[in-house]
Structures are given as structure tokens and as C-alpha cells.
Amino acid sequence: MVKTILAYSVILIYLVMTYYFFSAWLDFFLQDKEMNSAQRSFSGVILVLASILWPIVVPFAYLELLKFHKKHKKIIDILTDKSNSSIHW
Image (cartoon, rainbow, N blue to C red; front, side, top):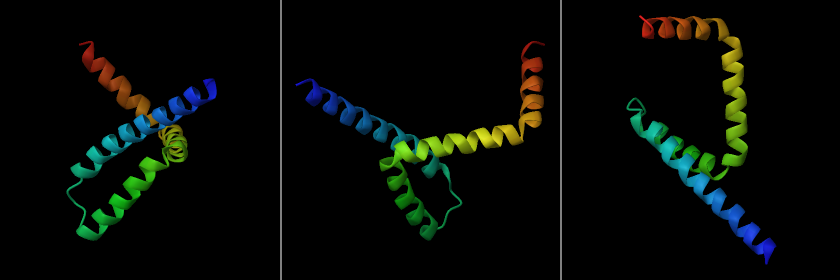
């Protein structure tokens, strides 16, 4: 009984997160007006695959984000300091 509830809970969480990632990534996908029809169809396939395989895709995307932040840390710090100083007048 407990195993069944746990299995359904895991499946439900997986499906909810799949929907969340798909809808968020679809918004980014639809905002890009510079793609031609071949790029758009290929990107649609990637969008569906990435949404289904989000437990694999998201950690790798996060690692890429961390690498980018490490590489450009000085520029990011300058920009955040500049934006914080303009807020405090």
C-alpha cells in the first residue's frame, strides 16, 4: 500500500514537473521569431524530448549555467553592483 502511494506520488511529481518545464520552455520557444520552419520543427522535437527527459536535462543545464557564471563572474559582479547602486540613489 505504501509502495503504491509512493510510486503514484513519484509519477505525479514527474508529470507535474514535465508540464512545468514544457510550458516554460514553450514560452521561450514561441518568443524566438528568427527561426525558419526547419529550425522550428527541429526545435519542437528537442523541446518535447527535453521535457520528457527533464531529470537528465535540467542538471546538465544547471552545470552549464554554473560554468557560465564562473567564467563571467567579474562582469556579472560589475553589472549587479551597478544595478544595486542605481536602486539606492
